[in-house]
Image 1: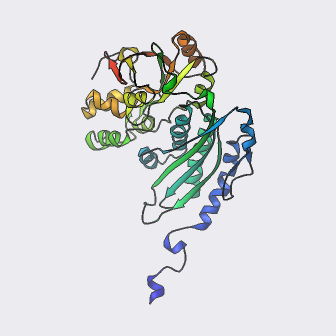
Image 2: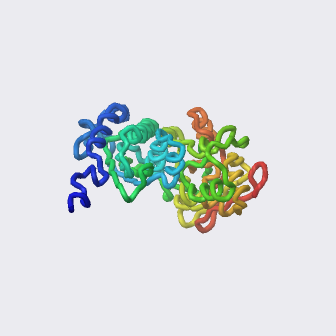
Length: 356
């Protein structure tokens, strides 16, 4: 009787070990392509290895580490059954946090939890992670895929990652370098990036009742394609810019929006004034605000509003920095200035095209 009630194998409980081994076979090549010379060995071991002797080129190397996920943007990928770009979002969220302090991303590991392990789907996710690592200039040296039947549905998954970088102690960027009259340069986003998707889903799916295959004139493509646009990866451009101009600090615009993130890189006695008239938020933000009847303040504390990263640079280097970023495919413009006053970020004026 008990044999009919209780599972007799792990697979009867919903965990497929053979599928896990198949995943390793499928991703070997894409992971190898997201490497660096310092990586030792290949995937499949219990840990990834990185040759630390390469850090001897730094006078006083400091290791930096970050961890993050992509939030409920995975729901869009699952509903569209398109899984090969969500990994780019993961790398952008993790690696670009390292760059804020001037750290060069060295390597990344990922973690994927799923309700049912489908090798081809996992391989597609990891392919995106590997592509993101190539864009960020770091290596994908390992990861973990876990099957959680009964906790996640068969079509559900979540992913997270952790990355390690290095920066020379004398080249750390941050609030202590920011000075009065520095210029604040905005680096344009590719869209929503990976923040605010719980509100996005509420507006489009619950309030507006839109479907993902709906063509939206404002976007020039379907709603799903717009929502799944990968996050722009700034890592290599930001690191290179620091060698071309006197960069004081970077601020990665993620959860909390423009004000909360820019405030994190300001000293106690300085503020920033950002001019909304310096840019027009991409259509997706305008559509969300209109459909959801969302107040401008709430939009600005939830979304990036078209700016994925800020660079605070010496005023004399403003033109050089903007031109250099543009020549490397990053839309950039002067958005504001560092002013006197207790630490704060003030947004002034109205966006081009009008405020909400």
